[in-house]
Length: 100
Image 1: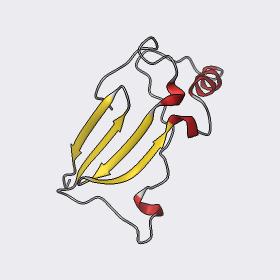
Image 2: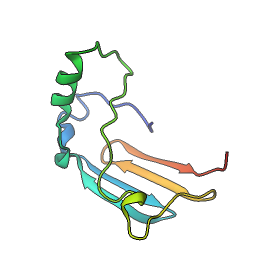
Image 3: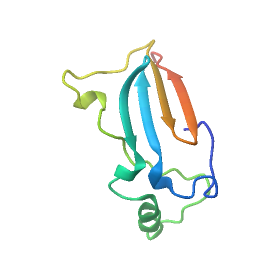
């Protein structure tokens, strides 16, 4: 998660953000939050009916088209790969893939 936390006043409409992901400098995904199946406010309202959301809770919403398992041929991450993911007006995170 990261690279930072933003508040609602910094991004009043979360349904207008461009997203991108690259592996080793090659773009694999590009989309916009306007394409989400369920809007952020709808997700928060629905989840809040069942549990109390607390500051710092994370709502995982899935990923845009382009995941490795859905490619032909399939593409996987390997030790040494570098994954960069970014969201407009929030920033980018960069993660090296390591063997465990």
